[in-house]
Length: 315
Image 1 (cartoon, one colour):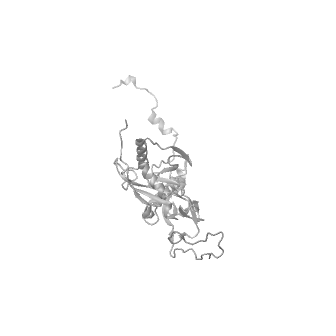
Image 2: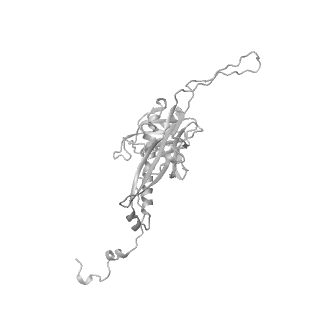
Image 3: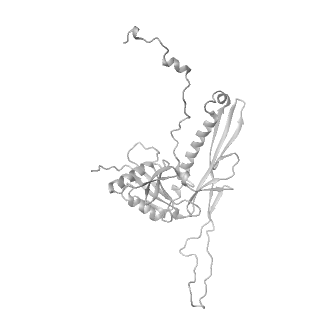
């Protein structure tokens, strides 16, 4: 124990802290992700909240044609292209929340950060996270739920191998845009590539670094769950990997949103001020409208039951 004579007779740090002006950060929201899917997916603005996907009836060749250079007696075949009579209509769904801010608190504690703006920013990030999850997992329009049976394949060995991703490419061979996978699935694929001596290359796309397979980027998202979880505790687990072609012009997958919203904040999102109640609480209604449509069966494919827990000892 220190002697009394060794004590310093001076202002303590704990006392000085009461007068200090500290450097503060904005609220750090650990659940925020890059949300690459909503950045890379092509979106279509709707006027009425309904998107009808008209398709031609299934068939190899909708029309017979005449190929002739000499015979004048050849009869030109006639007919028409048959459409599906009951095409699917996609309707926008809404993700909403209400944010309340005490105006007295906002007035007094408004420096250095505006309390209302910070609350709204965090709420918007939360809605955008939910949007990405719904685009993948929604029971009605979610991509996983709407992959045609003909576009579903099983992993050969459990772990995601280069052969498996090549099989996905054979299903979405018309200008595939990107793979979509949980980070654990991407790590498992990289281990399989290392085991075979074919490490994938990387590329910078839209400000992010991604690994490529056959020139197609593999985009990470924690919304493709592992055993139903974003962050599984176990080393093993099963998930899915999607391959997507995006874009209306390519008859791919398109995201949908409501255009021209009142009090529009950003794409498909309105932030509506609801006023201040008699207790001095200001209220804001946030509504995000979204959906997704698959324009052709071969615009998407899924590798199912991917095991993420295969590890190896390398010599």
